Structures are given as C-alpha cells and as structure tokens.
Length: 340
Image 1 (cartoon, rainbow, N blue to C red):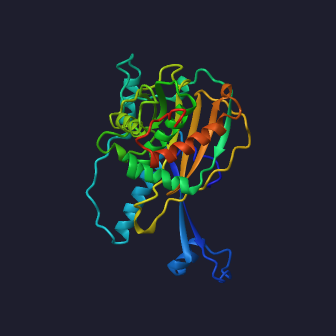
Image 2 (cartoon, rainbow, N blue to C red):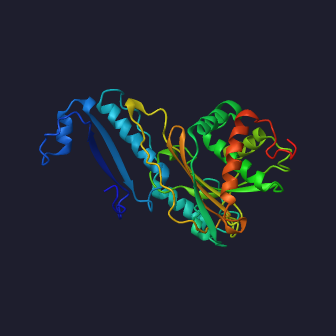
C-alpha cells in the first residue's frame, strides 16, 4: 500500500505494521496474522509503524499531522492517560473552500486575501526555462549550528532561519539586489479551528522582502524582516510571470519534538536525483524536508541554466558560510565587504 498508487477517490488510507525485534523467536507460523502475533509478544519486542497514505488531490501536507494528532488523542483516551476533551466545532471544510473559490473568482484586488483565497500554481506557470538540479548534503554539526542560530542568536523558528540563510546566500552571489520575492507554500489555516481542518487548504503566496543595500543590512535585521512579514501575512497571490523571478521554497518540517507516549514521526531521507538537467518556472526552486531533529534533505530542484552548470556549487558554499555567520556574526552585514 505504501508503494502503491494513490487512494483514488478517497481522502486517505491507514495502514498499521508491527515490526518484530530479532530475538531468535522466528518460529511463528507465517500464516498467522502479524497483528495477532504482535499482541501476543511483550511490548518491548515489537515496534509499531502507522502509515497514512493521503491523496494529494484532496489533502495538503499539514493534513497528515492533523490525522496523527487525532490518532494520538484517541490513543490517550483509550489508554486512560487523559480524559476526553471538550468537543471543538470544526468549520465545514467544503463550505470554507466554496467561500474561498467564490472570493477568488472576483476581480482583483477583491479576489485577494492572505488566508481566504484559492490559488493554484499552474495558473502562474509562465516563463519556463532550462535549468540544473543538485542534492546538497549538510554535515550534522552545521545543522546543530543552524538550530543554535535560530534559537539563541536570531530568536526565530528554524523555518525562518532557513529562509534567512537561503536569502543571505543568494544575496552574496547577487549583491546588487535590493529586493527578493520568496515564493512560499502557505497552510492558510489562520482562522479559529481551521488548523484542525482536513483537506487541501494550502496556497502559493509571494512574500516580498525589501531590505535596501544588503551591504548595510545585518543578518539579524534580515531575519527580523522575514519573520515580521510572515507574522503579518504580508504575502499575496502571484501575478503572471511573478513566480519566474522568485525564489521558490517549500519547507517540510517534521514533528520532531513533543509527541506523547514515545511516538516519533519517521521520515526516510531522499536519494540524489538521477538527472542533472531540470528546468522550472522559478529562477531557483528549493525543497527542504526535515528527516530528524537536526537532519534535512536539501534539494535544489532547479536553478536557471544561464547562471552556469556550476552555480549550485557556489550557492552551497555561500549557504554554509551564511549559516556560520548567523551563529557567530549575526550582527554582521548580509554581504560582507570585500576586504572583510
């Protein structure tokens, strides 16, 4: 089921798989039901994996976390670890989507809303260009440094720290820029109880970052500009061709901390791409997937071929130095002077 096709017409399917530790008791009859065998074993000999296969046509990324949050709540109630909480009246998901669709069909600017419009990125796929792809691996010590910079030096989330590092590295390669457009995937669940809705509510937004001369802006200041813009929801749906000049970033964070009863979210690291050439509709397309608390898959899915086939190597070097500077020189300029 995990490797098979999408559910097809259903929101999701759930699969529970017991994994037995190797303790020399492999004499169980293979015809026995694996769950029955697991329940007959001591809990210390069995690990349980729960897979949810979601249809991406109906569900966005946050839906998976919502499903597992519900599962853990029910598990706690059945295990007697917590009492049943108060029932929360959820908004009707289809009604919410219908309202967003109705708004989105209006003329601009009435059609725009930071949370309550619908936009599909296929509507903005203009300006396709040739490009190259690269898979970047980071040493775990550098990822420790990223978390330290976010918590102790910048006072922001790791997601904002990544956006700051990416923006800093990009500006060090293009120091004459005075503005960046970040093309983000936003969950669009800001209103009361919407964070519990299951469905496809995420939308693509352009977050403009105006900072002036990057040689005169501190890294800490750039992080604050990005963090403030995200808190204020200062983004908008992209106009035609606006995606083409933006940096597209998709950050898939993991529920690495705080899950009760010893539960852990398990993610499998991705492999490097098999092809070298890959185009896109944004100048730079990045996909970041957190695989453990301090491990990330950093996929540079596409960068403009006009920058040269080796540009990703320079970007990776600039990204590493940006993370170090965020941790040890956060008040230093985004683009250091040539004699620094």
